[in-house]
Image (cartoon, rainbow, N blue to C red; front, side, top):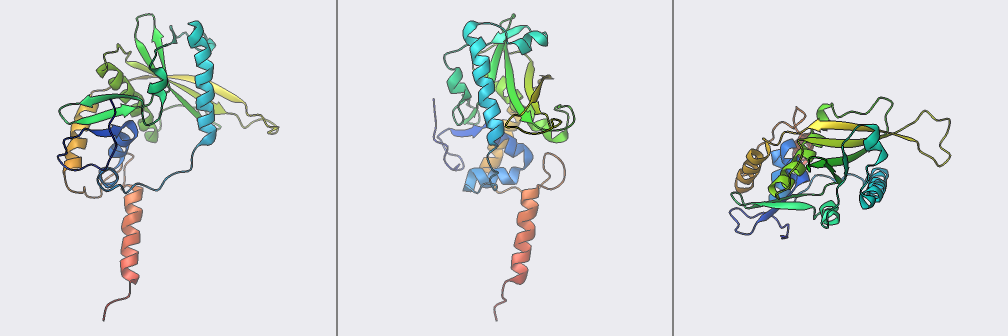
Length: 255
């Protein structure tokens, strides 16, 4: 089932689509979320991460080879992961941006959806949510930084969505995190990567309460400027506030 993702009208009867990324926006700043959903005023866009997207697509192609043969990928064997890539007729749809796997939360009339990177299945017939990440840094990759809480919430929403669609899902999600090495003596049209498996014990207890809070926010007045998910005032709201103050200060005064 699909719904048009229009501007939200308070108390509307038609279900309203809320993507995984919009939930993350709400967690970061309720004011920015409200402006986006109610008025269509979005945060300034970021340039596309084309290299990261390329790695994402290549990972999918690579794991799909083992999916078709119903065999474990070497990285699973190397890390002692008792699983193989999961095959399902809807997998391509679940991976598609702006489509994904969705669930209508009837109490709030919000249709929550998100696009997964991959799904594995273990010997207990549990699905494992897998997310690909790519970066380039001198230190070893992890998901322990404060700003990476968004990564964890991301896979937790996927776990919740799959369970709400009737699937048996492991509490443990996996990040396939690859790091482009910069210690070579040159580029030579080649990037070397080191890939690490990072497991995350998910907690989905927060999700349904936040969906209720999102509904209240959508039906309410514009929220005040508040703290961001990483602490401090939301940098987008802070910029908007200071720019407005400066503009008003220098506007010609009426005589």
